Each structure stands twice: as structure tokens, then as C-alpha cells.
Amino acid sequence: MRWTADGRSIYVTQGDKAGIRLFRLELATGRKEPLGLIKPADAVGVLDIKGGAMTADGKAYVYNDRRTISDLYIVEGIQ
Image (tube, rainbow, N blue to C red; front, top):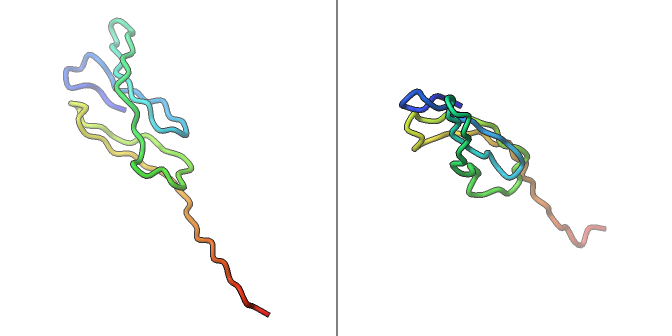
């Protein structure tokens, strides 16, 4: 996603239907530190989640999700 503020690591992601798993990858050692899971608060209708952007300090991020929501109507008494 982007370099960390100190320039020694990068933030990387791995996406799946559950959300975007976020890691910090230290380039000198290859150490991959898990930071958390980015996911929408309401997952109703979510088809996929794509990576977005993050601040250098790792405290804020944005992402994009694609969802389909529909309504079901029951109609009675039609003749």
C-alpha cells in the first residue's frame, strides 16, 4: 500500500472475502508483522473489498467495497 514513515518497512495487504489483512513488512529482515483486518462495519451484500490508501503513520486508511443490495416484496391477492 505504501512506505512507513521511517522508510524501513512497507504496508502490504492480502485481500479475501472476509476483508483486507494488513501487514507491515520489514525490508531488511523480511519480517512480516500482522496489523489487523480491514473490513466494513456492515458486511451485508459485500461482494469484494479492494485495497485503498493508508497514511504513513498507519493510523488512517480508506478502501473500496462493492456490494449488491436488493429488496424482496411479497404481493398477495393478485388475481
